[in-house]
Structures are given as structure tokens and as C-alpha cells.
Image (tube, rainbow, N blue to C red; front, side, top):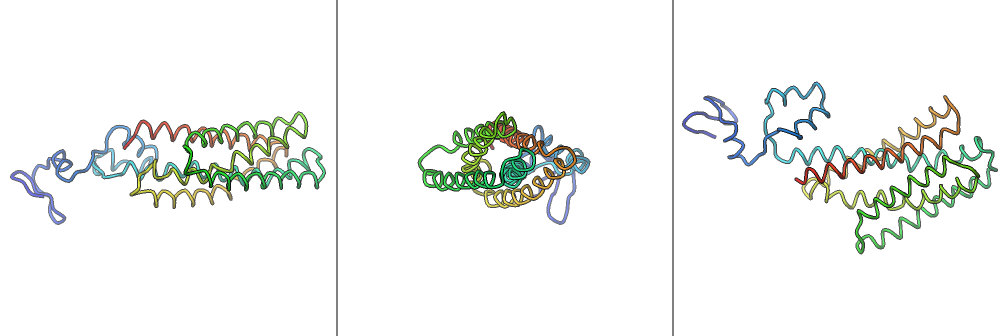
Length: 249
């Protein structure tokens, strides 16, 4: 781009550059305000290039940040889903003295309810509003986790496990299906890639961390760990929803 007072091309920058004009002419947006703050939180010390205005404008950077941020929910959710199934048997048998056959039966029911629920919600997904179902599922998952941890009697924790199986069923597919609503069509493929990667990482890392924590303290803390993970997943969803509503573009 050349003008009477300055020149900006791939090979030359000269004169007194009017950056506001560059932004207008190239159809970009300034990196200011909340977007700059989000970059600061994400990059830390590496954000000095933004602070010094070396990088001063963008096109769809806010959507790229959403790609990154939505992966957090998948990391937590998938880690919680897998940890619940992986560690419930240990919690029931070694910490609470439940017979192995009984524990296996209830964990099988958990997976059965989970599978049937996922099939059911897959069949009705195009006929209902997904966001209310997602909110309800997360609240029910928190309720089930609380019952699993509370455990005044074994049947209460068994019931909590079943509630969690039903609640977990629609969460992953709904989060995938609504990705386009959060980041737009142009970035949905990239976002889903982030989300799947985060899901696999969460399933491996969080399951292992629960084992380390329970081994270092007491096996009863498996229930507490699952409750905390569900709570963090719910809190992350609320935060992302508020971020999306306050940054509609």
C-alpha cells in the first residue's frame, strides 16, 4: 500500500505509517481491549510483541482464541467421563467393601445407560434445542457426582453413578455439534481438532492424576476428585458461555 506520506509493501516500509488507515484499508481489526487481555493471559511474557504494538491488528484472531479456549472443556469433560468409569470399581470394592460382582454390575449399568443415552440423544439432536440439554446434563452430572461422593449408603452412590451415566451421554456430541455456533463455519474444523486432542489428553492425564492423589491420601478421595472435576467442567462451560455472549464476533 502506498500513499503520499508513507509506503507499506511486502518489501518496503517507509514514511510515517498511519496504522489506523492500514486497518481500514485492509479490513482488519485492532488488537485492543479485551482481546489484548486474552492474549496476555494466554501468552504471558511472550505477549510483549502485542504490548509494543508490533502486532497491532488481526482478522478472526478472536475466533482462533475460541478454538483454543473450547478445548479446555473437552479436556475436563472427557477426563471426568473416563475417570468415573475407571476408578468407580476401585472406590466401590477397595474403599467401600462392595463385592466385586456387584461393583462390576453397576459399572456395566453405567456404561449401558451411557450408551443408550448417547444413541437416544443422537436420534433427537436435530429436533430439540441443544444448549438447554447441555446445561441440564452438566447439572445432573454434578448431582450424580455429589451422590457418589456423599455415599450415606451404597445404593445412593450406585444411583449417583447411574445419573452420571445418563448425564454424560449427550455432553460430548452436543459440544461437538455446537462448535460451529461458538467459532463460526470458517474455524469449526480447526476447533474440533483442538477439542478431540484435548479430549484424548484429558482422558489420559486426569485419570492418572486421580490415581496419584488417591494413592497419596485415601481411596475415598476418588469420589471427591470426580466431584471436583464435574464442578470444574460445569464452571468452565459457564465461563465459556459468558465469554461467547460478551464477544459475539
